[in-house]
Length: 256
Image: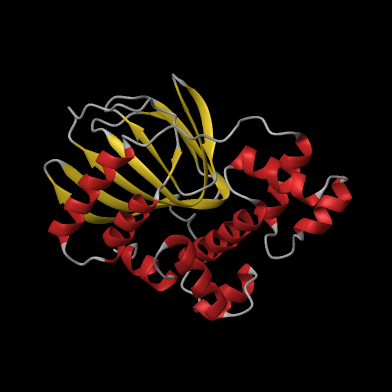
């Protein structure tokens, strides 16, 4: 029996009103979106995984929890990472004035993290809309802080190893094999990708578990073992700490 290809994008709507549509979106690994545009202004929050985005303003990438804003009608293309991406999307009214330039992904601050957590755990649609409006207003006012582009080859290869085998890649061993001091490796990785390699590995492992859980209906214990976690509890703790909600909740939100 031939199974159909899985849907490249899963979307669960959390709130909808005239000026604000809030959705949780999962992009499967390596999804490549061709250039397109949205009628509404869109604020996106990367909760897990990675993306590379291109607009008329240039190209950038993000591998950390971050926000990006595009005015209505902004043409853009995106490619999602080897573990896919989990995103919170907020579509605002078409006439929303956007201050931040497009193709400019910035890290989430503590207030933004709190608002996202409230959105993802609330069952009150009205409150979700209020949280989302505050979240987008604050995101548009965040100071610029963007990782550098074009990292050296050895650093890109380490990131690839952490993407492909996060549970098996030893960072200290990698430093010795590359021939750089562990402290230099950490600083260089953080400069290039916005967070230290140990946290990057944790986020990569968490996103691997989420993507594998959403790809089928296997028991979470089996998913945890296949993804490289010690057990289901380890996966539950890691995903909750990285994304603010457990795998079971993510599955439920995207089931409709």
